Length: 267
Image 1 (cartoon, rainbow, N blue to C red):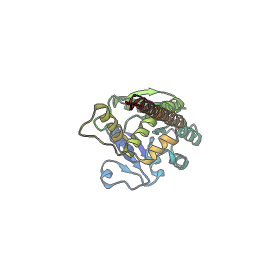
Image 2: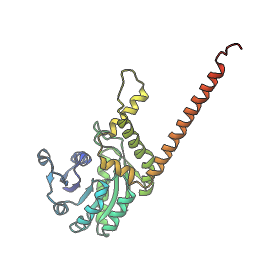
Image 3: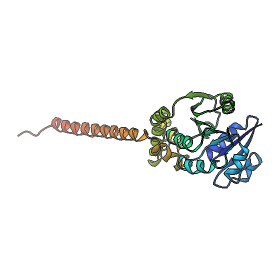
Image 4: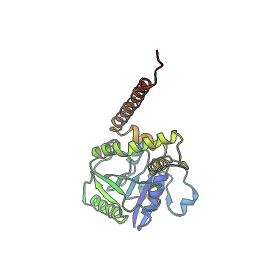
């Protein structure tokens, strides 16, 4: 039986564990916070990172990027040779650098970003994308584990997208970071569905509802730790300012024109 360890049992960690449970796997989970007793009937629960390293041949890192260095430094003391590490972060460049620098060639390393979550995947994950970036596979044992993992992804009917970590982060800055930024903005504006509305407005509200439940750690990782996100922020703000100027400049011109068209008293 395949032995899997999931480090980080938040919303995404729990969701990922449910997906992997479809296969013949022995899952152990770990989180710095207490794991509710209801989950202990479904999964083994590790008390320490050493416990999960002893158990697992596959380790899925589903933790906030901010804790990546700390967790990897401790894992290095206990991880078994030829373990396959799957870095499930919403960004890739920075965590990939940390993981590859921390571990030797004795472990296999890939980055795997599921472009869905508990909200978007609640009715099934078939057809969603799984972005895959190989960082280091050094021998046949690691390659065999990688092929098993790829088979699981295919059996979930996910679309595997092969890409470099750099290209992933560039594309995510335009898609994921921008969407989360707009969703947070809509939530801060306290917008919700109206009795009289349009389909496009409902689409906007669905964006807000899709991201509003995400943690602050995830939001900040997407916005601050993606090296390409700031350029998108600046571009968006610049364009919004340009549009604002155009609107009020046009308004000023129209007001001026309307004054010229007003009837003038006879002299």
